[in-house]
Image (cartoon, rainbow over all chains, first blue to last red; front, side):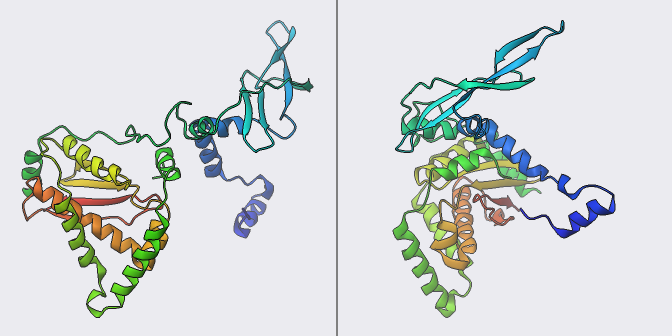
Length: 154
Length: 156
């Protein structure tokens, strides 16, 4: 998105770098989307460099001893028919990272419906056309007649 | 307010294409008639007719009524509704009323008026059938947002 000139002028007026301008709400929306849709979360963890590459971390403990740990492995393989073939994700604390080579990929043959359900946060075997009513807020269990009487007296 | 559930609901739906053309032509044709310059009363009346021909089962509680209404809308793939008594009014919040491109292409430029007036009439009829007397009226109190959410209120 193009930065409005007034924002840029404001940053300059207070001796700040206009490039520090950030769309906070956009970041919040992105976090919400990542929490909601697992496949977006998986894709989000992949940078072009990380895709298909095993990542190792060097974690330093309290004694200063360094140890290697795998972290945040995320592999997304796209088959020739543009179907997602493999998704592998783990997450651990990242302190320092280095690339150690190409990870051996495993084909899981994920079906289209599984991917669709993943996008919607549904269990893999769910029928995507099942009506989900869990988002509808519960209404009062009070008698309707007494509610109408109360409204009429307002 | 945009919630992930509203996005989930929207992703899975779109209106059938033939209805877009038919309804757009109908709306345009009616609006060209002098007596239909104001489409709102007409659509309110049609909504009441819909409420009559789509009767709800007997309901004891507000929760029962909400469930019965949602059952009709979900069967038609026309969103869902939430009922809440608050501040001396009964809030009727209909979500997902604009499946797919219904809002933007089926009724043309006047779609927001046509659809909301239809729902207003339907809720009026349904609530009257549940015992709300003629002093209680359903009125739209908010415009429809991009996810098809519109608030109506039943009040004296």
